[in-house]
Length: 313
Ligand SMILES: [Zn+2]
Ligand SMILES: [Zn+2]
Image (cartoon, rainbow, N blue to C red; front, side, top):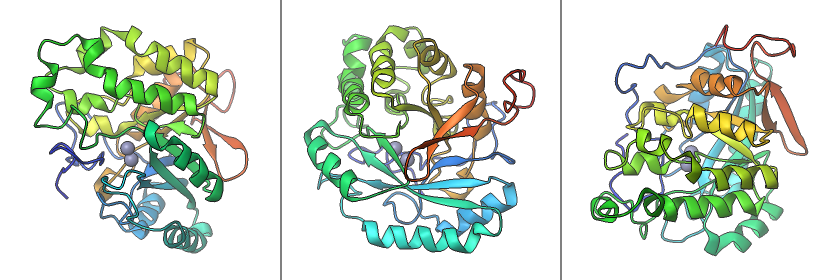
């Protein structure tokens, strides 16, 4: 489907071109234990039937999936009341049953759009709705300065700190809230800022990320390595490998990785690179949840504590 999220006012993400940008040889992964960020027809910006992901997972030997369709709390955003918990849960649990004995485990997750104004509503909602796995993300809404109509004039004459502040301040609150298993696409704003602000500009200002990473460490929230940036203009994960490494240095203990696919052809896309960033940062396992307590999924090649980094990924 078309990329609607750069046209302004949409909260959508990831539904971008389904081929890599530039010369980076990124591909749909095979033989991995988990893709923990996927959107189906139950998201307003995706049109992939759950069954298609299950089949693709089987064919590509991706052992486990988390279906994480969007839930918005702002009535003006597209995933507000788009589908009900009951409908989505039935669909995911039915698929999980069909695929369990074919070697594909399917979990019922969600990607909640965090907005400070709705934090109490989100807390109450998550108490009442027992998902297996919960991603909290900041998306670009109709009032944000990053829509394609506004971003050019917004960045003009502003410092980098002031440019990212509306997005990063909300991410900081997402991390502090402690409501989520993982924080989705930490610097997704890269997509909207390009080409006014490039990934290189942000890489030169790692101090802007420090409060976000420290808040994740303090709240025990995982950092997601989101591969969708590899198929978008940023041409790198959200966040970059350097930021994942810094998170580890600051005491971060939990990472997750997902393709954030909105198209069948984006399933597991770039996932091997995302895993690689986690491994290079020194992580030996991915954080996940299947309902109940957090669990660990070993990163391939790191089952032994003495495993060498960087060989097979
Ligand atoms: Zn998202
Ligand atoms: Zn997503």
